[in-house]
Length: 257
Length: 326
Ligand SMILES: Nc1ncnc2c1ncn2[C@@H]1O[C@H](COP(=O)(O)OP(=O)(O)OP(=O)(O)O)[C@@H](O)[C@H]1O
Ligand SMILES: [Mg+2]
Image (cartoon, chains in turn purple, green):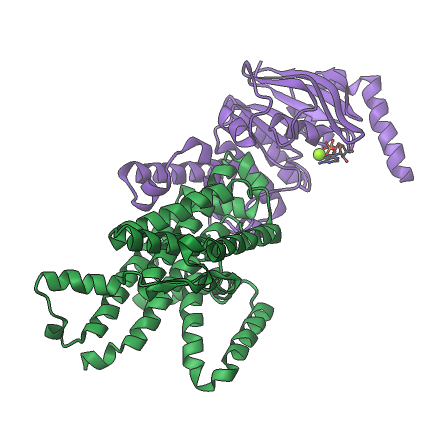
């Protein structure tokens, strides 16, 4: 198991955003996390990456309990993420964004940076090379010098994936990567995530685009109102009455809203 | 001819410009991680008093005093930087301004050590020390056609110029490196930076401490250039002045604070002939600038424009060079 979430709970005041959720992700699989709006999916990501502390429960990554580690330590351990509401460094170029992503895998400090020691220059060249490779990997090699905020929406989403991959994660968390993408972009994204899987990286995917999730994921967990209501293969999930009800229920609510 | 050019009055303004550049950098560096600090006047005072007292009471060489003053300011910088990490924007500004005032009040009230609001005079003067040392080697300024007075200020000016150039070089190089990228990432989005593996505590305290070291250093130099300091030199007026250098010049690129310090130190001198109105003009200019160019006079676009002009003049085009403005 790469990741084991054990009885995770998160309360915001009186609201139980995540309650008693457990699931495990196997090495190399694409694991989907779905559920209606407000189900607690993003909160789950924030718990795994230590953006919020757990109220109770435990998260184990590659055998180590990672509760209470700082987010940057989690990244060092090998978990990196993208954000639902894109959080690139807007004034940096695409390349610089990815170069920041390499931070945890490099080590030059102030003095070696200022005096440009041999090892620093080597490291800097390697960082730049890695950034170029990753931009190519996500299909943004022609946009290396473009400021992140000037990229198209779909490109920004792919840049976030490249930036997260720059930390050489074992586990990549993608929060609605297809949001705002058109059909062509979504199918390109499909290929991209498949390609990431072939690199041996485990993927945890939050996504509302059902065809994408069903085609891509090996296994899926479904959250509703903070609770896990189902887990299984795409087929099992599609035929699960509780899941169908959760989705239909929420759609009805939206119609009345 | 040489003697006319090296008018001590101009040289002294030159020295103040260079000290102000260092002070402006002391705001720019923490600000490059998004920390708006008004503590520079306080750290400057710490550096100045430390170095002045050590050189007067213990007869230590000025160099030792300056190093001690710089390090003390840096140390206090770490102590202030850690607990204020969580404070954002204007809240940090208020707390750091308060810190500066606390330091000033300590200087006023610890009379047995600091001589209270009267201040400390008779601080060893860098220029005179340099002259004394050189005279020991048989050097005489007259051989260069300079009077002692001119030589004293010329030597300080040259020394400070070298230091200022070194510091600009230092922080420019830092900016185009892993550390600089971490700073910029924190400034742009702290949470995202942390998620990308950047230890924001470390880098924010580092930047804050670098600012404190710079201000402490500038303060130590200041004490040994004026030979007289008092708590009023490090009041909140000074804190605001220093901040304005960076805000006026711009905080996106290092040339902003450098330009701001040069321009705003010169301006009151140039406007001396309309003495009563000069601070009104100064204030008016800042208000207009903030309304028209809130990012400051010098920004990334201007730098890129200057670079492209230089490039087209030379008739060469660089590929994507290793140095780009962030
Ligand atoms: N920082 C926070 N403080 C208080 N409440 C929060 C916070 N973050 C999330 N919540 C609440 O927790 C619940 C779960 O939110 P979350 O963002 O995890 O949902 P989600 O499943 O990602 O939904 P969506 O599909 O809309 O992104 C929501 O009711 C939300 O309002
Ligand atoms: Mg969400």
